[in-house]
Image 1 (tube, helix red, strand yellow):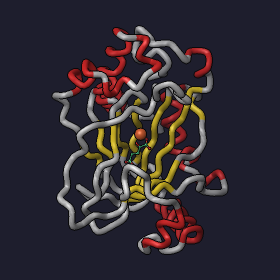
Image 2: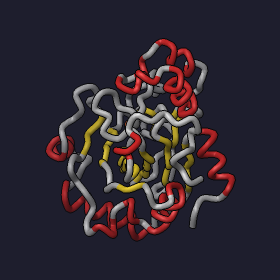
Image 3: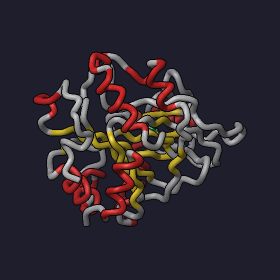
Amino acid sequence: MPLKPEQIAEFKALGYVLVPNLIDPSMLDNWRAQIRAKFGDLSDPVQQNAAGPPQQHREDITILRGFRFSPEETQLVNQPKVKAIVDHMGEGQFCGEDGNLRLLLPESECKWHLPERGHIDGYLGKRRTMPFLLGLATYIYDVEPRGGGTVFWPRSHIKSWKFLRKYPHHLNHSFKDHPEYLDMVKDIQPVELHAKAGDVIFWHCNILHETSQNTSNNIRHGLFARLQHKDQETFRDEIPDDLWKRWRI
Ligand SMILES: O=C(O)CCC(=O)C(=O)O
Ligand SMILES: [Fe+2]
């Protein structure tokens, strides 16, 4: 089941698309059971810490590092409806393994606000381990508004591409803090993508996005996978004259 034409149009225009209901409820139950079996009761702060310490810059984020669902058929990238869409978007050229499970802990007493800045997963400064990628995100439990949905800056993938066309040497830097880039994206209203468990967000590697804040009472369980292009080494420094050159949509 590939994307519908209007979903492709949305992905191209906004830089992301949220597709409802791509994971079977039985698989969601399987994932929840695997997480419980491995980490116990994650609502207990001691268990959260044991599963992965808070991030230095964000005490409310814990990444369950290195954890992968098993067997492989249970991984996000191998869910039939997800795989069909990924294969369609890149004609089978996107590959990679399951991503990180990121917990966003509730701060129910805090006032919710949008993040001020975003980051870009592709073109990651000097290391640039994955310059070209397709991002996937799903939530393992429903995420309500202000409950920790990832925030995206719509259409910023096009701004990133235009910036790099003008300043190709910035491929080697993290250009997201460049004054001219900041000026290009300053009028964009970021959007919090809250969603039901099992909806999947597909996003372009140039899109600005950021972890939000969770003022609900529930832990946000986010599963994020980054699928690289299998031939990325052959075009590592390319800034294409057509943004959709390597895509098949
Ligand atoms: O935690 C989030 O909502 C965003 C995660 C993210 O930026 C990433 O995995 O690349
Ligand atoms: Fe990211």
